[in-house]
Structure formats: C-alpha cells, structure tokens
Figure: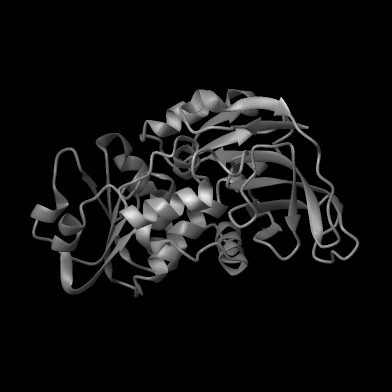
Length: 313
C-alpha cells in the first residue's frame, strides 16, 4: 500500500511516498481503508521538531517520546476518515462497510497511509451522516482539542469568552462550541481577512489583531482562550475579569483524546451546531506542498488530504 514516510527531522521534503506492507487486523481491531486525513500544525512540528516555546524538561520529554536523533514513528497523520474493510474476530462495534472517523493519537499516529488498523475500543466512531469523508477527517483532532480546553474554562451561558486565533483549526471549533453549545457571548480575534468567517461561526464580536490590541480595550472576559499558542500569557490575562480563567492550547489540551469527546462532536455535527472549516484539499501525493502551506501559519480551519479519489460519500 502507499504511505508517506519520513526517517529524519527536517523540512517538508523529508516526506516520501513509498510502498509499505498492508496491515491485517488483530482480533480486537478494524482495518480501515482511509479516504481522507489531514495536515495539522502538530504534524509539521513532529516532522521538523521545531517545537513551540516550552521548558527545557518538556523538550527533553518530547525527544524521548518522538525520537532523540530521528523519529521513532515514521508515518504522520493524527486523524482520518474512511471505510471499514475488515474486522478482527472479536469485534462487535463495527462491520465491514461502515463509514468511520477516528483519532490516531494513541495508536502511534499513521494516518498518511491507504490502510490503518485501529482498536475497536479506540477513539473511532461511525462518521457523522451529514459529512463527507474529507470533512469528517478534519473533526477529531482540532475538535476534541477545542472541547477539552473549553471544558477547563467551566463556561456558563451568557459568559464573555474571547478566542484568540479564532480562524485556525482549533479556533474555528472553539468559536462554534463556545457560542452554539455552551451559550457564551464569544469574541473572536483573527486577521481582517477572516472576520466574516469567524462571525459566521457564531462570534458576536470580532477583532482584527493587526489593527487593535484587545488587551488595551478595557473590555474584560470570563475566559480568554489562546487557540494557537502565540499569545503572551500576560497579555491574555490582562483582559480577564478578577475571577476569569486563561486557557492555552499548548498547556491545557491534555487528556482530550477520548471516545466520549468524539461522540459529542458527532452529535453536535449531526445536530447542525458544529461544522468543519476546510481551507484546502490536497492529494496524498501533494503532501510536501500541503506541509509547506500549513507551516506558514495562515490557514483557515483545516487542511485535508485525500488518500484516494473516492471521497464524496
């Protein structure tokens, strides 16, 4: 089967298309024929090992987990959508032909392939009926990250929530979850080009960060969520109410990769309260170009990779 492999850290060009052995499901696994995956900021960080600002011990831990001199895991891809091709003899949740979407975070990643085995009890579900495979692939990673972070804010209906980086992958989900699911009064911070997009997702107010510093406006919020990890904490906390909560995507998204979170997102998507924002779609063979684009840091929502050409179901 086809796969995108990398054997050393570096620029997008370290990614190579090659043939690898097709896996077979174990007793408790399903074999998924992948129709779509994504390129996330996380994928580009693991590929390049260009880590966000973190402490020294965190960098050491990252080296130990990802690989000290070269990557331990040679295939990236944190999320996917596809069709169950076959199942292990003990599997009861799924059957061949089921359309599914899943996170690969706890199974050594590996979405940049034609076929992937996933445990039946993993973070995998029947995909939302109203999404294509391309759209469904963009839900698990950023969607669960946004939800896990927002839960730490203990947001109540009517509270004022500011989301910095509101037009990114995590931000676009956070705006929708905070406004449409939690009932918050959302202010989105993004570039001028994306103001209308963020408004359409449920933000009552939008701020162009290139023209206005929200921290200097005098307006305060119950929750400030930095959804891109680029905001100085002191700046974000300056806009908080006395009892307000500051949330950072890099430090507050741990533990969100759970089936219960994925199922909640599925429910909200099917109820029309949540939708993925797709910026660009690339073929698997264009993975280098896709990584270059995502690494620029200006994408709107998600960048999707079609693994085959039958992705419109």
